[in-house]
Length: 113
Length: 109
Image 1 (cartoon, rainbow over the protein chains, first blue to last red):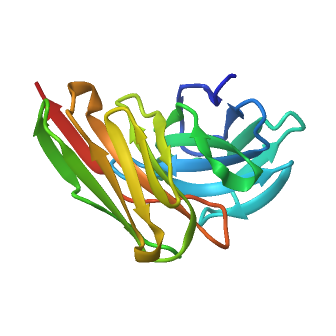
Image 2: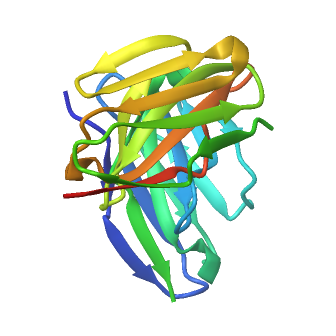
Image 3: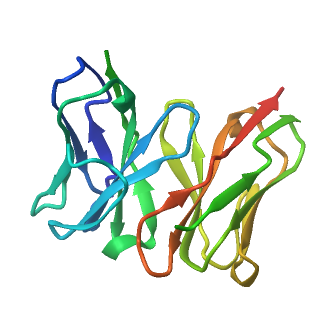
């Protein structure tokens, strides 16, 4: 059974650019959630996808968007990057909207300069 | 939204000592998880424990849902236990996880 995998592991972008982060869910999981973790803080919920539909969104602007594909993998897109977007981005997968808990990937560390 | 408070914020132990980490939450939950974040950033799931008691080796956890708190016990701590421990909950009406601010544990040899 494979776990949650994220790519890339590290990324450096310039302010104003766009970025796409990718996540492959754990085998058998149909729900993917994305979180942003700033240095020294707990992860903050960005949004969740269940069977390719958005199922809840946190307090993030529309320039944060996402997709879930038929194989339940997911992408997080961030447009018009700002310096404050520098953070660790974590992907988590689960069965049916969190039933029996979430499994997290290793994250993508994004630095915006 | 739901509030999650963890204590203590920092904990320094000698190898072999025992510790208790606490998580208080402000509303009913249908999911509570304890995670250990390693130095590379990965959140390792320790327990899925919306209620009751579970044990896994040197670690155990208890959640008293009616009183809105959970405890994580670490016995005979090792240096590899160092890192940040997070409690995260999901409200009964939703599915997003809300995290506490974490407990930074340092175990010295």
